[in-house]
Image 1: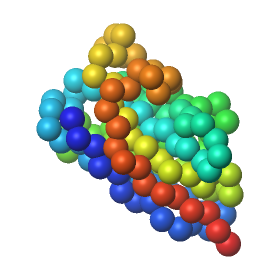
Image 2: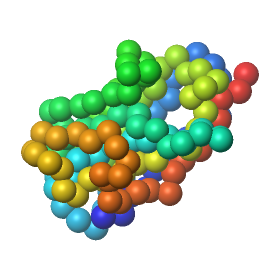
Image 3: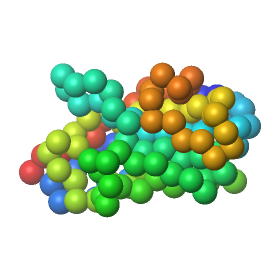
Length: 127
């Protein structure tokens, strides 16, 4: 599967941000999907994930309440909405696909469980 992220750019603190990921090349519903991010000087970290059906989600504890992941299995896309953006949200955000989820409702939080990755989209936070 090929993954292409979009929606990154410059945002001001307090604003909302929506990222999208378009998947192609394989059956989208075969994959659990996730979003990760890597800030400068830090390791890549889990942000949010959604099961194959879209019914089950997981979020990073540090972002709960500000973040929503969505999945559109008709259009083969997954989205990420982040509200009340903070300076520390600046990062490259990656979309990832897990081809072999442990169960139909599984959502992995480890990046080692995701086989396919987009090239990332940069989010810069500046006032």
